[in-house]
Amino acid sequence: MSESMFFYKLFQNSAIPQVVVNKDMDLILANNQMFQSLHMEIRDVSYRSFGEAFRCRMLEFGRDRCGEKEDCLDCGLRNITRQILHNERVADNVIQYSFIHERECISKRFQLIGSQITWFNEEYAALSFVELTGLHRQVNDLKAKLSLDHATGTMNKATLMAALKELSQAKKNTGGATVCMIDFDHFKLLNDQYGHLMGDKVLEVFSDISRSHIRKDDLLGRFGGEEFVFIFFETDQRQSLQILKRIHYELESFFADVVEIPVTFSAGVIHVEPVGGQLQCTDLLVDVDKMLYRAKKHGRGRAMCSMGEILFRNFDM
Image 1 (cartoon, rainbow, N blue to C red):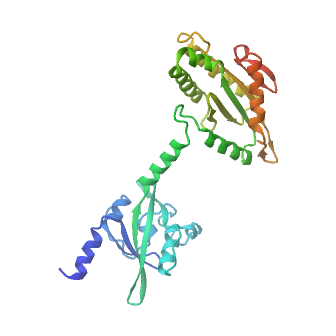
Image 2: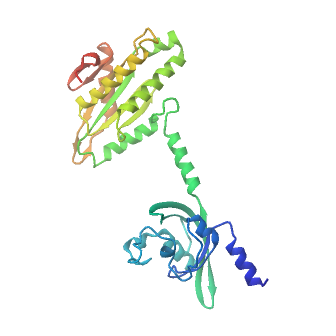
Image 3: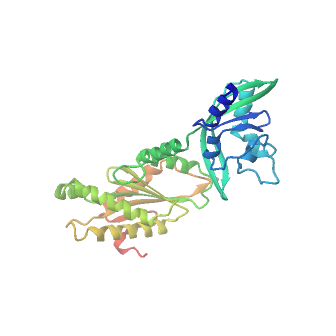
């Protein structure tokens, strides 16, 4: 076996996806693992553009050419390859490549490692694609877990506060939002009489019931202890109170035959209108907490809002 054949076989059988391209992103070589990583049959792709050979999602095949669309200016693969060919420092070598496979769009993340090669006065880039898709998914899953309160599966306080900050800066909320802070009634008495495991059960059941009644875009977070905050987007106070009423009813009914102490909560409710395209959330939590305090002071099992005092049991749904 000649030396050139040895290195060619080494390249083709590498466990890492690898290609060699010219300055126009035309493929000179692509190894077997490159095809496998993009779910494609091994075939000759010599001197075909990378995007056409590996079915870039940005191209309408038969009409568009790789590198000629406006979106190609932002192509991470092209930009990094250009930097490699010019021996420039690559600041960020992680790319996302989206391609079409069996009529579906698939996106994968790769760390792109490359070097410049000069052959017969022509410059080429040898590129290795280290797949990070699984790692990226694990990191996102970990971030999601870190953003949640472990005991209830709701947003934790830090994530909730970040969401409120985004709410104050959002321009898309043309219908405003209603913010509700709830606190359980006689929760210490419940813990003292039935133990902390029962208290944890109440919080868990409350969270499950609440999630079943709120929409996908609405938010629920644990503010601290037994205090929770709801954010209902494009929902007025009456609609929000109807949701709280249903949650309150189901929660109280669930524990009616379990404990002698009524499991209820009180709530402070404030509707925030957009002003100049943005929601005004300055001192929002302070104001809604004051409403909650007034509700508890008036006898619990009720909400306090601009409509006045609302007793959940008597509120007309």
